[in-house]
Length: 470
Ligand code: NAD
Image 1 (cartoon, rainbow, N blue to C red):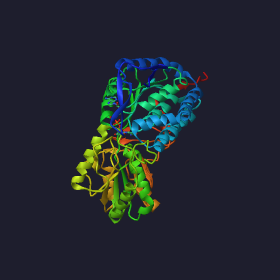
Image 2: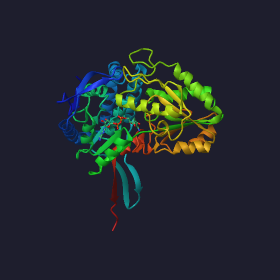
Image 3: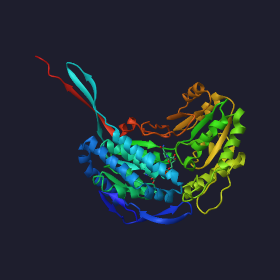
Image 4: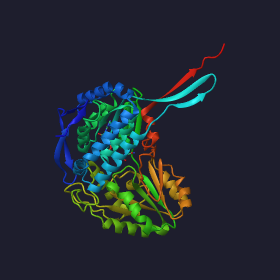
């Protein structure tokens, strides 16, 4: 059984949690299920490790982040096997999450250095702006990209001089626990603690009085609870929540050119990504052609267990999400028309065929809510202003995109979207150097880029009066 990393030692804990194979629906592993005592122990270890880590040099901290990235690279095949086992996804996607995203974010934050800023200097005073680490950071991680999201929280938090307690998602703890085992030798004891456990462990962690900041990625509903839990001690909080990203296909767009990209950015990781296309607005003049082209691409793809070398898409990761996606599709079938997919078998496993649905619109759950699965509603519009208004009329505002042949027109339309990220002729183009902001109920407290360091730092001004001649 893989163990939790607490205070530099690997611990088995006193309870266990089953890990389910999403390709079969059957338990294949157990992991520790962190108790309140385990959480308290991890927070105590992180608190004890904080002063020395805070006072270490940025170069020393960067070396540790580099060593973490190196541990992933040196063990990437083993880690990919675990990630495939717990998510069911194809190998190339597992390798992308580990080798590109997780390693990329660790290395990026290892490369950053923040110097104090000189705000004012004159004959009478010198005023500087400093940024100081906060203390213990609780990092709460969802199941859709478990290792990447753990790393894109650990990397800036650690680079800034904080210590961290990570709580993995209940259904995807394996790969992150293994990473904890691998880095136990290269990270000073207590600086990184990794717990597996349920929602109760998360709730206890975020309300712990010795936690200075919570960084959370997950659903908007849980985000609200976390914000409440942080209120009593006014903890700092970053919330990366749900998304319902709209993409607008402009009149005159070349469907043959853009359809593969739209397809890829809608069904990436079987749609289980916060910022993939979840509402596709297509101009009247191109609507039928777009639906047919997407259906042809989806119909040619293989959905199968990630251990199948030909698999291009895996299952939905857990039963609760599978039932949710099935519910959205069944409801959409009542008024809409399934162009491809839509026929969901009762197992084995949580497989959902890639599904495109047309003739649906606002008022259908599949359009108004976040399905978080391999299903794309295609929505017809006839006026670009109307499409922009409808794209913006969501409580979510994570990402959005505009697709067209006239780049000036696409830029002008993109500028009117309210989402934190706006892409043109692409979607969900993540890069560690680029901030990934969330607007409205998609959250706040940005991740990514230099801006992604600031939420892990407290501001302090140092305002010095200069001696004056008598
Ligand atoms: P979730 O909210 O159910 O769970 C996320 C994590 O929170 C899990 O580790 C869970 O155990 C923990 N948790 C649950 N209740 C808690 C509580 N009261 N206190 C503390 N922790 C608690 O989300 P999920 O289903 O795992 O993830 C899917 C959601 O995540 C989707 O809505 C998706 O859009 C969102 N997401 C957002 C981003 C982003 O960057 N904005 C990225 C990935 C996923």
